[in-house]
Image 1 (cartoon, rainbow, N blue to C red):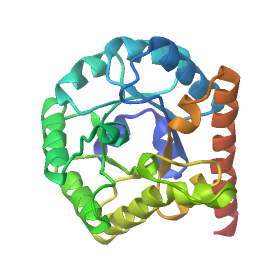
Image 2 (image 1 turned 30 degrees about the vertical axis):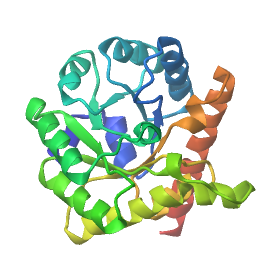
Image 3 (image 1 turned 90 degrees about the horizontal axis):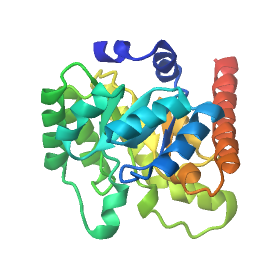
Length: 259
């Protein structure tokens, strides 16, 4: 899509190479200190993109702290223009995980309506939309197709916040990621079959164990939230981002060698 060409070249390449690492501070995280710590860790750890709450002052703060492109997330399209003026490169509807504990759920029609309004407000800005994992997989795939038809540039999946693994260790990490991995596979397959080239970002509930799986099932990149933003120290955040970066790069290297 031509709008993706407006992104910084390094970000474009990470999407094309299927090695995008996005760090998410939280759609409802408006705490400047927290956003600063996550932003700094994302930049120092080697992330390609930083996803923050849609607030102009936070955009300026995050750009200074991370020196990487910014994506702003919201479910209120009217907030996007000011954040873009402040320097955001991407606008995003969702992620919806933080709303579910309060009983707030988003239907396919509502998500589509929010996307249409966002595209109307900012026709030239890259638009990403999260597909709610509460939808059946076939409905997730159909919504993704409908979103791309309406001019959405990136599709994101979710599911980790509502996943309840029962096993310890590595198996538990795989169980935690299974909803978003399943959504990614279904959506990526549907987009390919329809000859759409919209990249897919697999997000929510991922770890070092499962980020390579996300790429293998069709994602162009991954979004990491609580694995980073719930940590207590800046050093721990940086180390986690670096480990995730290494997991992605190692998988990409092996895949390249095997081709």
